[in-house]
Structures are given as C-alpha cells and as structure tokens.
Image: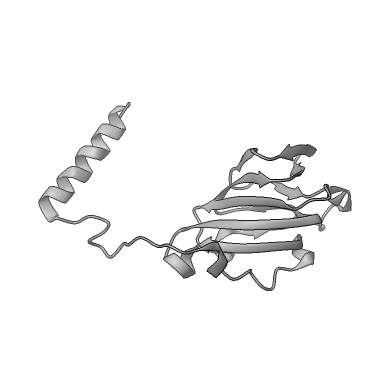
Length: 166
C-alpha cells in the first residue's frame, strides 16, 4: 500500500471484519463462472443505434452474475462496426484479441490491431470498425454499469457519421 488513504481503508476493512465477521462472501457474494459457448448472442441490437453486423455476448453482467459491470465478447465480421457512441454512466475498455480495424475517436479514425488496449472514460465518444477482410475479436468491459440500460448508452446528436464505417 502506498498512500495513507489505502492504509486507512485496509485497516477499516480489517476492523469491520474482526468486529462483525462480515465479508463480501458472508453477504451472499459468490463466484460466477460461465463458458463463452454457453452464453447467447445479444438479440435486438439495432443498426440505427450503431450496432452494425456485430456478434455481441454479455459474458458477465447484472442479469447473469449480479455484477455492477459488464464483461463482453464481440466478433466484428469484415465491414462490421460499432459506430460512434458514448456511455454517460460507465467507463469502457476493450482489448483487440484478433484482427485489425479503426478506433473511432473525437479526432477521426485511428488504426488499431491485435494487442491494442483502449480505455474510454464515461462521456467520451468512441467506437470501432473492421476495415479488414478478417474477423476482429474484442473482449471489453463496462465499469460502473451492469446492463446496457444502466450504461447510459447514447448515439451522437443527428445520428452516425457514414464516413466512420469506411
């Protein structure tokens, strides 16, 4: 631990546990485990909302695990895109596991490929499109929201920029 606040927090947690016996596990928290092959693809994602030909799975979320975050898996076929959007209520990260394309930013398109890790704080416009002839695979997460409804998902005023999907 490096700062005074962390030391105080750790001491407080230790004191609460010692005095009450309460831990997150004793409050009913438990491990959740699944397998990607057992998680259905999300249905009803609309093109008009920027979900262009994407295969999306919510691996961990409020519904499946009672979590206040989401961990997801997305496959973008060639030409697919998650158009520019933002989340008012959560931060997002994604990791490019396979393939290449472009990150959609406030400053336009930036090349992205396997191994890239991207973090978008809440309220920051972002997106990704597959401009290659191979699948792009992303693992991603929302920190602070356990569902799309809780994330505060928004499209740009006036709709999407068709130039971002090229």
